[in-house]
Length: 257
Image (cartoon, rainbow, N blue to C red; front, side, top):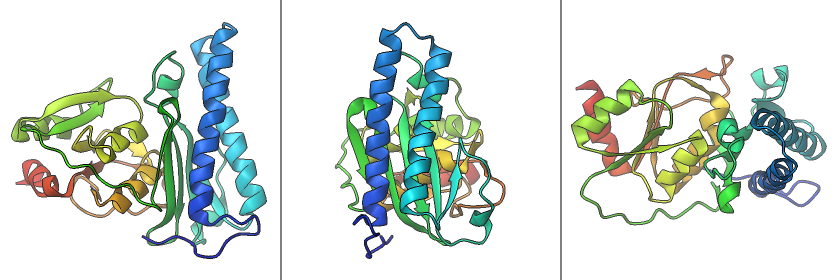
């Protein structure tokens, strides 16, 4: 993974911009959520406003600072430039909207990634309620883990079929969290070992987490072991596997042998 060595006119490299956008968007969302709940707003109003505010801030920053770049944003309209561009920002301004709308939950995230045509050239994920942020450059250092049973992290609401197979085959302990970014960063932080999802998602759900995970040295692929290619015309992405490298072979063998 590489980062853009040439500063933009405002002095930020792509890597610096990705990290700043993830952190600053998160700060704005934390303040917004606190203010809205204190004012008595309902969960749906908090969720809708959070999506809109996060999108508006990142979209304006990219419009001003990277006007020639294409954008694939969950909350934005289709940018046709992305089909011919080798610089596409893949954004989820509020990953885990449902968790954001639940007072006190921390498992939501902000995703900012730059796809360079064949791989990521920048990426960052912030977990604003925890005051934490992770970047592809500089990459996180994976902590050493020493536990008898692997920890597999999955959705709060459902256990994907592939995850059940792996959990049974590897005798995993299960952890449940909300957003994709929170689950992926749990593996980066060493709180979990495997994040496996086969229920379908969109490219913006996993792009920035994948960029950070790859930079950290984790295994990232589709659940058949093939690499994930981003900025596809159809934004739907059926599945993803992010895990510690030493577990990739056992996980894939459990699924396909």
